[in-house]
Length: 250
Image 1 (cartoon, rainbow, N blue to C red):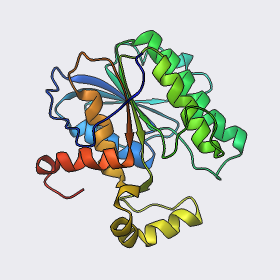
Image 2 (tube, helix red, strand yellow; image 1 turned 60 degrees about the vertical axis):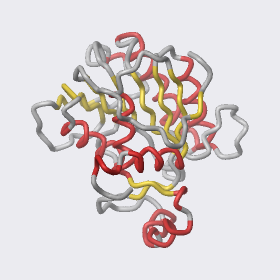
Image 3 (tube, one colour; image 1 turned 135 degrees about the vertical axis):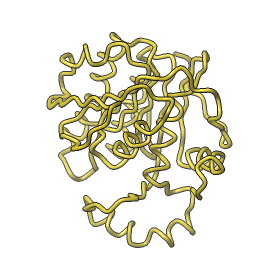
Image 4 (cartoon, rainbow, N blue to C red; image 1 turned 180 degrees about the horizontal axis):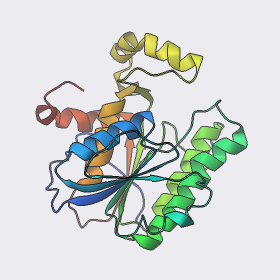
């Protein structure tokens, strides 16, 4: 894997996307993963979607295959499901403060690395789109545990040997659908979002916009080996570049 490159802020995703791709989505019961699943199912460039998670999604679609997997500490049982896949959108994670530090490290870093190891063995040419986070630190020097563990996962993915790895580092992700906010801070941010978005536009991104670009990058037809980091500003620029296609504001 080549060194991580920084994407140009005006990057476009208009490259051809045929033939149809077989896509895996991990964590589709979550906020971003759920949006990614809906977009992938409606996307003509996607042949099939394999959803892997702990909870039943409660939906049915001719493209969808749902796989329930409880123990992400051991993904060996997923080997057959991960064979012959073209792309993965990995959104499994948890919130800082909702679990212990040890659990945060396991869920954020160990689960990602273990899953990637099985995938690489069964689908070595798959593209990998990873939901990281703002401030992720691959050097391990950050004082924030979340940043260190996300950085550890990023570093392992870049070294795993996948031809294309896309690392998304959103700041505040605005939930476009009603939900129970996990912490007081998230409740506050949602309440002040209209003002926060105006004052700090590059510190926010809509959940559906983030999911959309995470899916679209792995559907691109390219022979170039890439390891790209998308900060929040880059994600918003990608969305704006495709606004005529989506026919709505970012």
